[in-house]
Length: 200
Ligand SMILES: [Fe+2]
Ligand SMILES: [Fe+2]
Image (cartoon, rainbow, N blue to C red):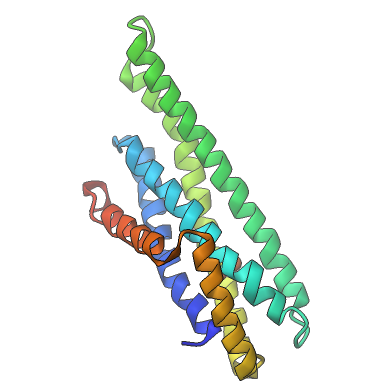
């Protein structure tokens, strides 16, 4: 597989994460109960697979390699800014999730505090909102990058030697996030989420 195809392939997985995130947000907005633990899994997949692994490959290997070719620098600068936006959304999601959990635990320890429903309604909205923002981010960002990758392929901008170097660099990116075993686990978590009742 080429270094560009590898990233395009990841985008297919990212869009599965997008669909999960989107569906989860819709369900929360419509008042359904979704286990917090499932949303925590979404957050882990975002952090480890989407951000550390996929954006890691782009930031540490692919973009530095393509930056100086055919005037791609401006596109890449925008992609890096978008990665930061994605990170901000993910951080805010995690913070709201923690708040929701803290309230739930606080309630368990205090019989005078609000009911389950009160806590759920006020805590759910921000979580639903950031999940939705993240889904929009993935759609928008991978769409733009795919067009950029098509262009690179059309122009044949990456030499055979650079291809090999990039694939090696991807391997080290994979090791940075825990190696093949951890990536396998991430893919299993995505399967698991797709299989949850609220996804159907
Ligand atoms: Fe990206
Ligand atoms: Fe990407």
